[in-house]
Amino acid sequence: MKKKACCFIGLFLFGLITFAQEKNESLGVSNKTFNIENCVNQFNQEAAINTKVGYQYWFADKDFLDGRTLKMSVVAPRKATHEPHKHIEDEFFFVLEGTAEFYLDGKTVVSGPYTSFYCPSNVEHGIRNVGDTELKYLVIKKYEIN
Image (cartoon, rainbow, N blue to C red):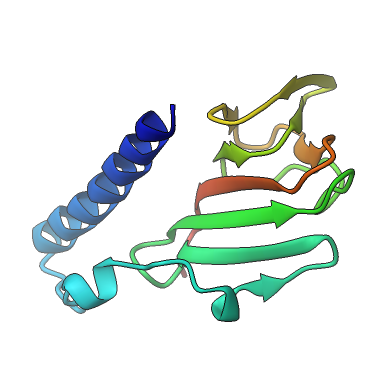
């Protein structure tokens, strides 16, 4: 299972970078050079951002490409980063460790590692840690860039 998750993440990141490079080339935009130094981002606890219930680490923030992001969130047992909410962007969650309760439009499902959760645009959604260990999950989202 871990091998599948690593393959999923690797393929996603490869697609993210390849698409951005192709898009930039087709638009005649080459304001960013991609190289091994800025295309590899290994987790660094010192660069993590503390939250009220854990921390988050941006592997790709809004400025890396064209608003597409990859973030890892870590949430303490029996906590949630925030209450269910909705926003214009759709997003994917991918659980790496722990037990998550997914909320979508009034219904919930509890699941563990190697589970994905898609949240459509403008639909109320949320994720919370319902386990006794840390919940670690990836968030894949695209922000509009002005």
